[in-house]
Amino acid sequence: MAKVDRRIAKTQESLKKAVIELMSEKSFDEITIQDIADKANLNRGTIYLHYQDKYDLLDKLIEAHMNELAEMDEWACRLDWGNALVHFFEYFEKNYLFFSTMLASKGAPSFRTRLLHYIMEGFKGEIDRESGRNADISEEVMLQYAGTAYVGVIEWWIRNGMPHPPQIMAKQVGALLERSL
Image 1 (cartoon, one colour):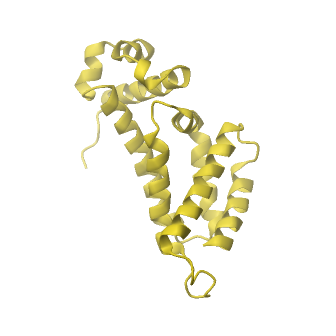
Image 2 (spheres, rainbow, N blue to C red):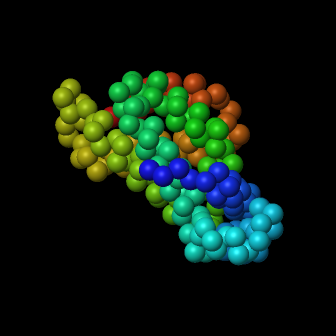
């Protein structure tokens, strides 16, 4: 994979940061390309060198975070629930502005759905069928239940200013997921 020029990466990061900061202030529909350019201290034309429009910028921003979460999945699957989830909660904490904005934003309602779908896909191979405790529960119901609960806890944690450290959240959520999946 070709290495991205540092100037291009810096410009794209500046634009992504600008759009998230603006979304924390007002609805995505109200944000203009000029608003993004002003916030990023760039020319409007520079935005169009990198993205088709503000929707493309937002989509690329979301895609970048979803890819980072997916990369963490690669090795986290080999850990027990509590230890694996520490890294995810640390990631949510590190990217607080993004997640708090995206989960609260009326301009990006598809983000929660996308996050839920991603989590449900990750849980597919985790359902305990061997012990018999989930034998009578359909996979769809189990995935919906666990995925919705996990996303709900993430939302609660972020909206309430992360009242517990990532390690505590991971331990508690891990114990709950282990009990249900």
